Amino acid sequence: MIASEEQARAYVGSLCDEEAMDRLSLLVGDLVEENQQQNLVAKATLETVWQRHIADSAQLLPLGSPTEGTWLDLGSGAGFPGLVIAAMRPEAPVVLVESRKRRVEWLNRALARTGLSNCRVEGRRLEQVERFAAGTISARAFAPLDRLLSLSARFSTGATSWVLPKGRSAEQEVQGLPRAGRAMFHVEQSLTDPEAGIVVGRGQWSEKS
Ligand SMILES: C[S@@+](CC[C@H](N)C(=O)[O-])C[C@H]1O[C@@H](n2cnc3c(N)ncnc32)[C@H](O)[C@@H]1O
Image (cartoon, rainbow, N blue to C red; front, side, top):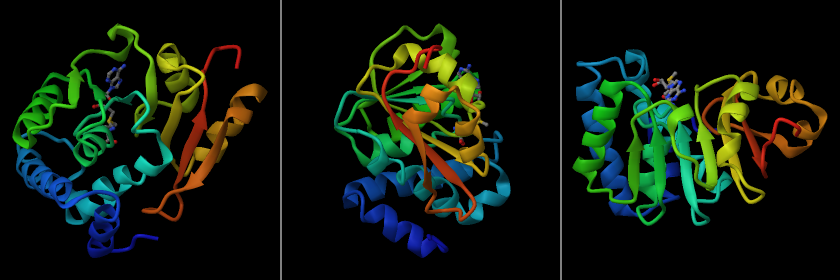
């Protein structure tokens, strides 16, 4: 379990190169500043920002398929987890979907600051985003699992990986799916919170799943 800022940095560093760590450090500095202007993340979480946000996002990288198609992050907010994935894998295409204007502006500024050209922001509601086939779909604190799957099903194919941090409710939310859906997903232990789970799966979601 990652239990300190030092461990969080070391863990993230084990998954990416030094340039990526520099980009993430830049993002952390900017996030702390921007959080004084708008409520991007809970203020208290900034004291452990590497644990609560950076490592919490980075742990999705080995569970997803960043080299297979576009990584789609739903409701990115301050950029978690999608912006962290884009910063760690600058060659992998990432799409961040976020509907709130000021958050979209922050995300675009963060991309410009870090010089990331692999990532674009869809500044609108997910329901209005034109369909494309996603290699990985991630979403943290976006919507209950059944609604999340309904909203994003049209972006999934048989080869799509799903990586969905779900906190304490992970197992319960999977059990609440129809039987075929339950078979598609399992829960991985979060490395940043002993009580949290990550819903992981592969395949195309349809309402008949
Ligand atoms: C609770 S925040 C989580 C942000 C980020 N994923 C995180 O974990 O820090 C949920 C975000 O999803 C966005 N959102 C909610 N519904 C959306 C939709 N239908 N389309 C696009 N963005 C949406 C909200 O504006 C908000 O920024």
